Amino acid sequence: MSKVGFIGGGALAESIVRGICGKVFAPSEIFVSEIRPARCEELSARYGVNASTDANFLDAIDLLIVAVKPKDAEKTFAALQNKIPASTIITYTVAGLKLAAVEKFFPEHKIVRIMPNVAVSVGESMTAYTLNKNAAQVGDTIKNFWSALGRAVEVEEKLMDAVTGLSGSGPAYAFLMIDALGDGGVAAGLSRAQAIELAAQTLLGAAKMVLDSGEHPDVLRDKVTSPAGTTIEGVRVLERAGFRSALIEAVLAATEKSKSL
Image 1 (cartoon, rainbow, N blue to C red):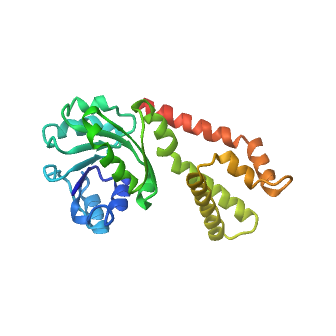
Image 2 (cartoon, rainbow, N blue to C red):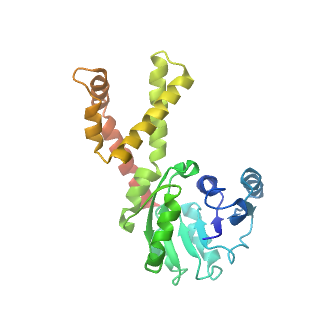
Image 3 (spheres, helix red, strand yellow):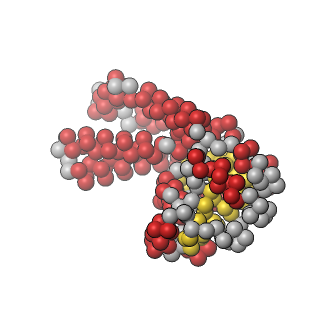
């Protein structure tokens, strides 16, 4: 792929642009269509990409990423109908929108439903994707593209709402956890800056241990939980407060919300 285009220039689109700009694509190879002129100017100034209120780049790109709000999705795809070359891969990040709803506008196209998260902006996204039948031949291309921005995994479409509830919304849960741990550190006497740095790096390191070791989180937790020690005391308090149950319910609630969109 030599050029990529975006329909929509919101927060998620910007996160993806930040992640690929100068790494996967040169700024001149990135095009953004956004209805707000001021936002176009902001994206152009910040990243050097081609941003405008029209979409006159559709004939020049290999990959299109549609990143609009669910309420705007149908009218957006309707407006794009008959304007995208058959060779262009159409991908979209719209939560809750099934492939069949997009295929009715583009029955001959390669279409990919994707769910990255905002960590794409730092090259650490967890992206899940589902291919339509026409896109089966470009599965490796899609996986390689998103793997360059973190990790990527193909899932059945029926699981995409669960992906949205877990990894799509998951960074927000992690931010809350870092903030809360930071508050705990401040309450224990650390400065705010020290507490946030300690909390963030601790979560980053724990996540890397899970991914690199391949061991179950329970196994790793046991390795750092000494009998009658400080860690088990903290775990005991978290269990009593329903910490794990709260996270489970958060994922399920976000999944149900995705289904309702």
